Image (cartoon, rainbow, N blue to C red; front, side, top):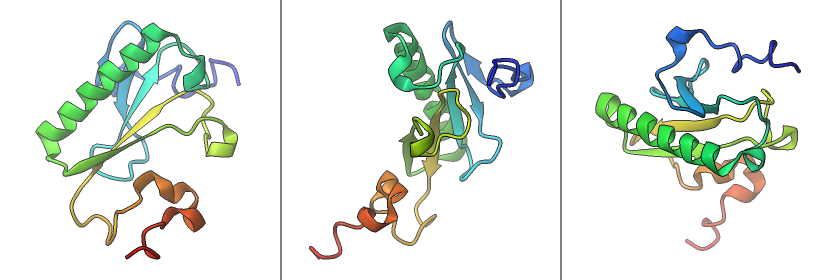
Amino acid sequence: MTTKSCPFCSLPQERILGQNAHALWIRDGFPVSPGHSLVIPKRHVGSFFETSAAERTALLDLLDQAQAAAVAELRPHGANIGINDGAAAGQTVPHLHIHLIPRFAGDQADPRGGVRWVIPDKADYWSSRD
């Protein structure tokens, strides 16, 4: 994939809600909850582990801004933060992006396990301990 065909390298300016020297944040085009945001490096890079220290700092600064905006607007009760890093992890756009998914009391009957549910058979480790 070239950067010309990458959806994150050619974002319309009106989608960008915040940015700094190395990163930007937008609302997800296919949100799983109200306020679902993506924090994206400006440089076309596929993996979190390929980012520089400056890029990581910039990404986390914008993650804080996106969370503050979600709290101000929506008052979520929690959040999931996730990165699908590589095709085996479910990454479908090969440009790093961090998901910020605001969570609300009652949005799932039992939210325990959170991101562990990426491997459903291994997610619930607590039932046998209850």
